[in-house]
Length: 506
Image (cartoon, rainbow, N blue to C red; front, side):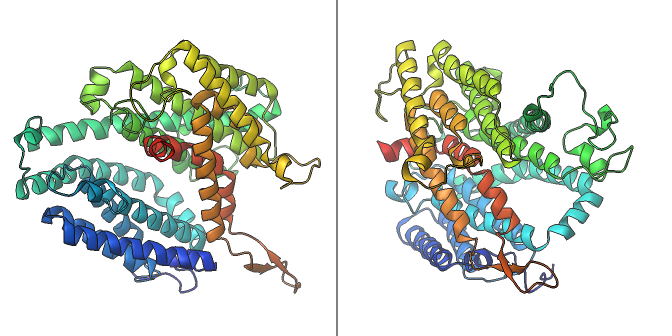
């Protein structure tokens, strides 16, 4: 596939080079990837684990220095390399040093670097060719979606077990107990297929929830019931029939237009459905079928996967999953409402706040990190500890939400407060997850905003109009959207990395 227009290369350095700190960050990531390659090549005796990581590090360095800049195929290669790195990370490395397997030079750390590169590539591609991609998706969206789902299931079902089996065969563990519970290749493929198909169902459920959130985001600030009136076109008012109301698929089938009046249906509707669906899918893998590997303090389940978590239902993990999806959807909907220039209605906040406070009192396990417990065992889950943890979380959330007023970062006028410090959102985070989560989300929020600043050059200007010579600063639209979604994004990242965050805070 040939290169794109030279003025819009979808490469990592194309975005980071807008600012001097961004260029430094690109160099830092490239150097770190180089150290990962050197560490695995020098210290690891597991040759068949080292080779994919060395190749992945080399690809990350090449992309960060601008190699293959402007080629449309590079994001797909980066995603494939990142997937291979995660496969290697999931394999037991019995002979490799512990500091190499779980330290800053681990396969997971390299996967994070590749994930950052992939994200930058997608952002650059979206900025430079948004209109072309929008037109292409409108014409072939259903086909792309179908082929993408089938290809993903096939790769997860066949390629991942084959790679894991190859690594195990070429480099078997020294200790027999590592192979006691190991599945055969056909069994592994069967279980991977079940996991992928179950994940697809969770993705669909998430998109259905996202479709409902679109209704909530539009109607709640306007005082319209979300249950009584059926979905309808905002242009002509015609009811949307069931076959056109399928999440994501309906918009693609209609080519983004109303069947009755041909009015454009905003692209934000399928985007919201897709984002919520992917968030459900991410937590399905990271939190649910992993046995709670992301949760702090709590010991992860020994037996994981769909068969042990869902078929032999572990209701505590199901409760975590549902509760955390609820919190993320709440913050996402409120961020979108703020983005549209509205305030969250007090009645809506009161209902959600009561749920986030009451759920841990009914099920104290929903707060996996009580206020009086470090990141070590044992831990005691009681109603008293849950009540105190939620109360301290509310105080911490209230303190964070008042930071702009305390530090004088924003003027006190009639404008709504910054979405980054939306008080209802921070109170819900504190009540539902505890004061430790408030600190962790705040740290990740700062990193997110800093990352947005790295790809947003303040000197980037455009002309006000064809007859105007006055340059006006306009941040790239994608950066503006990323800033508006900073708080729910920080919460989702925190949920996925909660155990690692707990280790940092001790």
